[in-house]
Structures are given as structure tokens and as C-alpha cells.
Length: 237
Image (cartoon, rainbow, N blue to C red):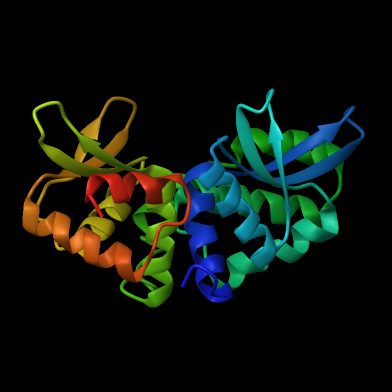
């Protein structure tokens, strides 16, 4: 599965939603620059994962910040335009990333630097409306959504074992309560989605039967990076 191009591409979209960024910057207030980036802690498993993704979708992988991080990055405009076509086939599902993509496409279509400065601070204006429209519903339950969730768990999931031996799994995201509910239902969890500090929504699972549901899900839709190693330690596989 982890060498399947379709799976890697769908997984990439979920990972990108959690740890990626779509950037539109300017050069000396004269022209616009476009960038796609995923930035992760520099661990061998993360590096190898990004290399796999780069082979599947394109982009460059390199170390940065004195080797503290590893990044997947695309800076070339034509390459950015090619890669964002992936999001037409496998859509972004979080409001923030959808807003980033819309702003990027707007700027790609209109290179006026004054228009860029006039609109960049409002690029998230439609975020609440997008979130409430539940953009994930057309793909919920599909093989794409499952691969997307695996990528999103790679970015935003957490496997914890407390000193007491109690095990838990959690997923969190800022400003996405409905999406968290949909992911929770995918795992057949009855736990509530909680709102925490900073408008972060989280659901946490302790129940053994539900943890086994998650293990089964992740065997069918595998993690690829460092989170895979965390998963293996968590389930003592």
C-alpha cells in the first residue's frame, strides 16, 4: 500500500492539511512568489516518508534549520500549478487550507501586486462558511477519505502511554469540530469531541475495543512516517 501511487497521493493530501502550508509571498513588493511546503521534525522515518511522497507527486526534500527539520517544498510556479491539480482530484477538506488554495489560485490568475496586498489579509474571510458547509461529506467513507485520514493522523494524531500504563489515542485540529466528528465516527467511537484552549477540537480514545478499531483501520490505511513507529510501539506490534 505505501508504494501505491494513488494511496501515497491521497495520504499526502491529509498530511498536507495537518503539516503543510500554501504560501503566496512577494519579492520586494514587485512580484509574487508561490510555495507549497510540509515541515516535519528531522527524523529518519519522516525523511523517508517525504522522499516517498516526492517520488509520487513531485517536489524536493531537504533539511533545514541546522538539520532540526526536514521539509518537502515546491517553489517553481509551473510545478506549483501542476501539483495543486492534485487538490482538484483529491480535495482539501479543512477550511483554512481551502482558503489558502483559493487565494493561491486567485493570485496565479491575477499577478497584480496591488491586488495581492489589498486582499491577502482577507483570505480567510470565508473560513467559517466553508467549515459549516462540511466539504468532506462528498468523500466521507470513501477510500480517498480513509487514506486522507491516515495522512491527517500522521500529522495530527497522538498515541500516548501514561506512566500508569493507560493508553490513549487522540486527534485534534483548530476550528474543525464537524470534521473531527466525522473522523471520530470513522473509528466507531462514542467519545465526545471537546473544545480546548485556542478553539482546538479534540477527541481522545481510551476504550480497548475502539483502539482495536483504530489498529484495524491503520493496518488497512497505513501510516508512513514517524507516527508509524509511534503506532507500532503503542500497540506493541
